[in-house]
Each structure stands twice: as C-alpha cells, then as structure tokens.
Image (cartoon, rainbow, N blue to C red; front, side, top):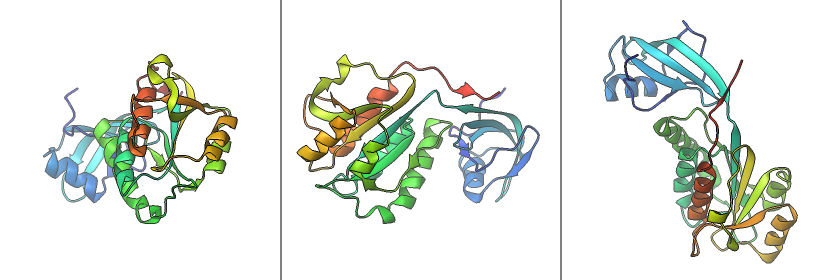
Length: 244
C-alpha cells in the first residue's frame, strides 16, 4: 500500500465501516488537499480519538473532500495514565497540555490547591482541546487526551486509591530506580508553582501516592508533569488491544 499522503493523522468524530464514505470537515479537507496536496485516489489515515483507526482513500477533492473507508479497526489502550497537576505560573499550562498529549497521557486533571488555583481555566479549555487534537494528529496516536475541569485536590486524589500513584517530590526515590507500570492505570500528582502544603502532602500520602524524584534539581510544575509522563511513557508496554 502506498505511503500516506498526509504525514499526520486526520481526526474524525465518527468512523463508519469499510466501504463507508465520509465528507470531511473543512479544516481536515484543507489539511489533506491544500497542505498535503493529496489527489484523488491517494490514501491517508484517520482516528476518532477513541481507539478507532482507519485507512482512507480520497474520492473527491474540494472545500469538503470526500473519503472512503478502506480498512478500519478498533482497539482499547493496554494501560492509562492520569496527570493531576496544580496551577503553573502564567500560561505554562498550554505547553503542559500539548506535551502530555504527545506522550500519550490519557487524562489531564487540573487540581486546585491552597497555594494555587486554576482561576482562568474557563478561557483556556477550548485552546487546550485544540492543542490536544494537534498533538494527537502529530504524534499519530489513536487516543485523544481528555481534559477535565478543575477540582479540589482532596476530591482528585480520593478517586485513585486503587491505581499506581506517584507524587512528584525532590525527596522521593529517584525515578531511575523505579519501574513504571506496563499495564493498568498510573497516576502522577504534581503540586502548583508554589508547592503543596504539608497537609496536602499528608493527604496524598494517605491516599497511597508514593514520592518520586524526577530530576536532581527543583522542577517547575509543568516540567515535573512532563517528566513524570515521560517516565511512564518509557515503560515497555504492549500495543493496543484490538476489539473482536
């Protein structure tokens, strides 16, 4: 089969079965036919962000291009990762969301802490969604990062007592001495720019979060979140589990 005409995945809300035809949204049509200069008969790959992956053949070009599904399979991820993060300084959350999506993190959950609150998330949510989509396309992944609304740290940590949980902490065990999980759910907790209070650290400890040191120096919130995600992403893991 020829190489894809588009180097990045297309993202489609729905993927019909083999032989089905889809009229692409204008932005995906523009990317495929104008940016990548795909011609009728050439192929591209698309995902629905929920585990579906399809090979498409371009049937009609134009402002709203039409493609036909040639192959399509669906899968679930063999493992998942959540990042619970306090508010960083300024607009550094944009960069954090983009890189977490590239690394394959499943869910980004902003947390409100005593020393830092996500007060401007309402105006960033739409931008974060666009960044997550762009990262999925560029990294050619099946699964789209989910971005949750902010919630208090006590509520966030209480929901993950059965998962493998880690707290980014300069005094913790070095990440190089710990084995990231290759299956199941993993959760990384990172404090806000001003750090967690002793009470919040105790709360995390009681919930089963183990301290992990991600570098030999103090990291910014967004850097620590990405360092933990990189540690998790580096675990040897199997590929997606295909649906029957």
